[in-house]
Length: 295
Image (cartoon, rainbow, N blue to C red; front, side, top):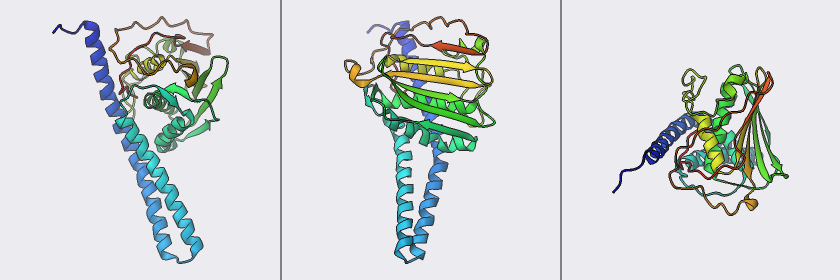
């Protein structure tokens, strides 16, 4: 049996690294959501006690309604974590982006509130995107965590879905009101291992320089685009563009063969002083993305 080529070895090592980072990300999410789950249980216990204490129908109905709402929330939290842990499929399917975004925001709700981050979620109905929901949710979680880290004193994150009818894509915008990215760094943010962070933050997140690089690989494997616009002192906006499902039905799954190493495309020159933009290529060739791509 011939030895694997250098390209195959690199692809295997990247997949192993992706899996290791996904386990790390899951550990971070479990730590965050455990506190939220404890709050949900406290709500259930308190309203159960109220229902036992009072015998009138109105009070008991209110207690049951609160218990049902809290239990439903707990189920959504656990289902979100289980989906991230179990889903190793590379299949592309029509994906409800409103639900995907809502579930991601739920998983990070407590962490964002802890750091005084307000969320403006603009989620109108949009056509289903052809996507691997697990991988796109991981990309979104990474962008949300980056946005939170860019606002240590608090701020606002805008998450907006829209349908680009001209290009027939579903667009997902994540914008923060943080410090922004200097032009000299913006051109390099998709390079593997490039980071401006001094290691992980207080929550253990970030600092490897792999997050955005792998995010772009995931989006390109979906035949989509990942664009960033940033103004120093005002904030940063990432836009994910994914094909609408009915227009890309021929692409049934993400390629499952190891890819050869691909060079990073040359970054564009920074835009005028205060605002810059870097965009991923329009329609990249298919590439393999590990089914356990990390945050």
